[in-house]
Length: 374
Image (cartoon, rainbow, N blue to C red):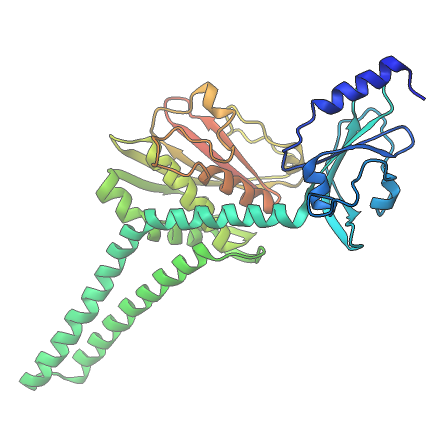
């Protein structure tokens, strides 16, 4: 039993907990009975406003949980996947964290989110950012399609003209046909690249040539960057290490997002973007990293690394710590979603990799992607 002072401390702490949070919050007493549940917890577990006959206070936690809570041994709280029973009997998969409600009190704070809803929200954010990115790519795609379509129409006109003049021989016809075929395949590749950029779903890993991914990304943005933003792009790729295991569509999106971020960082004057790639052997210290440290998990197995480097003003110290946060942007209102870097990091981490940001020695910023060796 708790003394009056401890009871008052528990009651005071419970009243400070957010009742309108999206995250479900439960407080358990020393016997693992629920003493507090916020509205989100009751709603997710079926005890909300539409179920007024009962609520969660007084319910033993073991009635809700598929497994007992892990003992608290003073280690930092970790979010784990667990199952909680809905009032209708079905099991709900959640991401759950437990901790002490306050030092020297036996009460436990359990917070959780619906895994399915969280996944759906993350996928929705990703898709929203992709669709927002399409606006950026539209002008570039239109320009890229104009060239092969013009070749096709001009060649067809030449064929018809030569047929009328009766000057078309087999060699000319073969040349014309090959020109049309090459241009048609270029159109197909453009549309396939764009379709892959917007595709949703689970990672589809494949052995991939990184140089081909860079070529796909440049196909989408390079002409627009040069003509509308005065931005040139050059590449310095490691010719000996080009094969990686990844989802090529998702990694193309990472490249496009990082390139777009670099482009915007150099406005209005423009500048140069450099795409570099290199290999980090297991146990090797990466001398190319300046401020960022190589994660130990990647050091152990080695990594394929690539960086997008710009010649802009660099990243301010008060910005760099928030730069991967969702909806964080330094652009003017309406100029960006604040999701590009966040989504890029999410995709890289889905590949068990890391996305790091640092300033270059002279000026500009560098975003480094580290993909562990498979």
